[in-house]
Length: 121
Image (cartoon, rainbow, N blue to C red):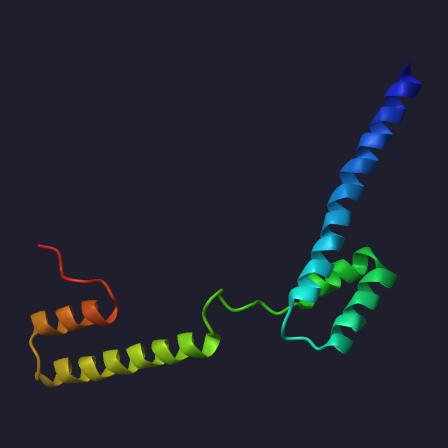
């Protein structure tokens, strides 16, 4: 009776280890061939690394893979917008420190720049 339980436990352990690793392997290939930043030769090289080194190749691929930009946004657009907001905030602070604008106008302009809308009453 114990032999049947041990065999079942071994089988379940084998499935519990194999299925996630196989899914990771498939995920690497799906991700690899969907990437637009790599040429065919680099994709083929990564594919060969993953195939021949199996689990180590999967781990190395995910560690060395660059973080993709947010969907629908280019990194440059986001950086340009952030830079413009920072510059505007610096100008606003300079004007406020010089006394050119009042405290209320300063806070309202800051809220508008940051997209926070109107101040709450």
